[in-house]
Amino acid sequence: MRAITAALSLALLAAPALAEDAEGQITAVDEQDMTITLQDGSTYKLPPEMDVSGISDGMQVVLAYQIDDDGERQITDMFLPPE
Image 1 (tube, rainbow, N blue to C red):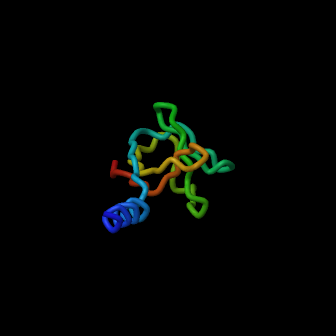
Image 2 (image 1 turned 90 degrees about the vertical axis):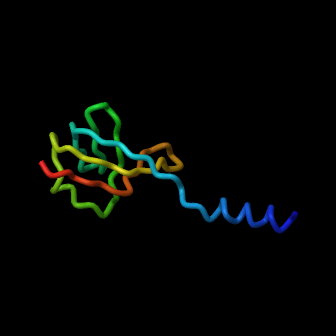
């Protein structure tokens, strides 16, 4: 029984954090804070290494994100559908 409990505990610790997704039109890009805001008012934190010159207001995006320890939505992947 201990082996099963230990295996289950290890599996839960090894499981990656679940990502959520969102999509919509960008209404604001804040290069200072490295965030974007979508039309529904939700704000998402961009990765620090991202070049924000390729994104702008009005673009449609599909995002994958995780909520970090501070409660911020941290973007893990971004897709810009063809227009």
